Image 1: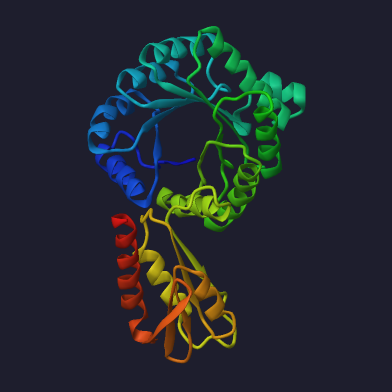
Image 2: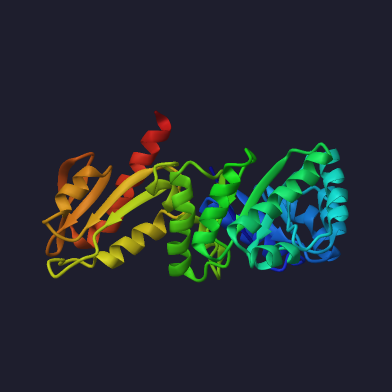
Amino acid sequence: MAVQSMTNTDTRDVEATSAQINALDEAGCEIVRIAVPDNDAVQAIPEIKKRIHLPLVADIHFHYQLAIDAIKQGVDGIRINPGNIDKEKIREIVKTAKERRVVIRIGVNAGSLQKDLAQEYGGPTAEALVVSALRNIEIFEDEGFDLIKLSLKSSDVPTMIEAYRLIAAKTDYPLHLGVTEAGTLVDAAIKSALGIGMLLYEGIGDTIRVSVTGNPVHEIPLAYSILRALKIRMVGPEIVSCPTCGRCQIDLLALTQKIENALIGRKDYLKVALMGCVVNGPGEAADADIGIAGGRGFGMLFKKGKATKKIAEKNFVPVLLEEINSMLKGKKEV
């Protein structure tokens, strides 16, 4: 189950695009997509490839020649939208991809569904999205091409869920999951957790993207949180922290933010409990790999279920990070 994102820089700006891709890489992204709106963007691909380590996917709309040229410039995959490229032009793209053994994602999108399907089905329904995908699978298979990935995205969560359920019953091609145009951080997290999470729980999906308006680096921890919550991939630190109540006598929010920021990009799994009182705190902290249950100006450090020592609040962050780094180092040496 791979985690994917997409840059929001101008692809023609090699420096900015490469920097954002490398920031995504550091955050844990595993596949990255770039917009390719014109020939200048195509020409930037080789230089971007030199500066990054992630598999690079070119996102193409309208202009089939850009897809062909991007393949020739060395991208690892392309995404095309069947709603805005003519059928015969798609065949030309497929022929080039077949020669180079480059993966193509058929990216059906509710916002750009073919007009005849929108009219026949009364809009971008789940059924219409599936018919669009199947039409294009037929084109690809007619050319003897099977390096296909599918996505059937909608900003409407129930439509997205139903579309993926329907296509999963009709084909075995890998599915890329996502709720498109999901909004800013909170809405994106909720919509994606519901849409992507429900499908993953049913065993549907092979790669995912949590779409967030703004810095795409914010997408990565949300994606891994969904995977961890479903126990699909135990990647990166899992922080359990209480919502706080009137019993909390430490600055738990500041502590949680500092620990989260310090652990960004770490892929080793570790459950860290940060609890603000002595009611549920000891139990939650004891259930984690490491944790603190706080009191007035102090906290009890727990490791693997056992209370180990009392720590002053001012030392929470350095002590926790030292212990976490020691644990992670120990895991690698095993």
